[in-house]
Each structure stands twice: as C-alpha cells, then as structure tokens.
Amino acid sequence: MEFHIDNMTCGGCARGVTRAIQSVDANAQVTADPPKRTVQVVASATRAEIEHALTEAGFPPRAL
Image (cartoon, rainbow, N blue to C red):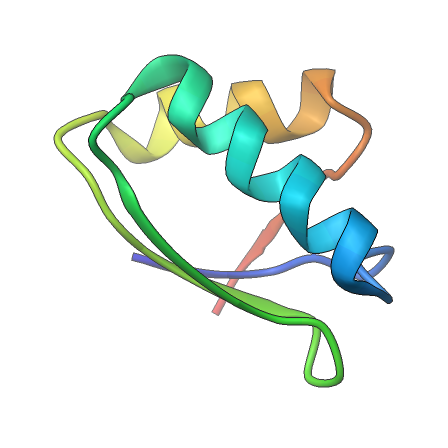
C-alpha cells in the first residue's frame, strides 16, 4: 500500500507515521519518504485500519 501524507515533512513526522502504522500491525514494514511525502507499507492490517490510525495520529493520508 502507498499513501501520500501532506503534513509529513521531516524525520520526526516519519517516525510518528511509522509508530501509528505499527500500532495496528507491529510487524508492518514502513518506508517513509518525507521529501516526497509518501509512505509505502507492507502490512497485514487493512487499508482502512492504517488510514484510521494515521488520521488519529494527526497524519491524514491520501491514497496514491
């Protein structure tokens, strides 16, 4: 899955995004790219679960 996160602008944001995703799937593989504001996720959690976790953490995603 890939998401665009408009307000992920730095490494600290990327860590917050990673924590949010791993809160619903501790084994998720997350690759964040703050300059492009994208995140790629390999997880067993559903897209809806990840989107909800990101939104709750203050990083509302857009699907790419």
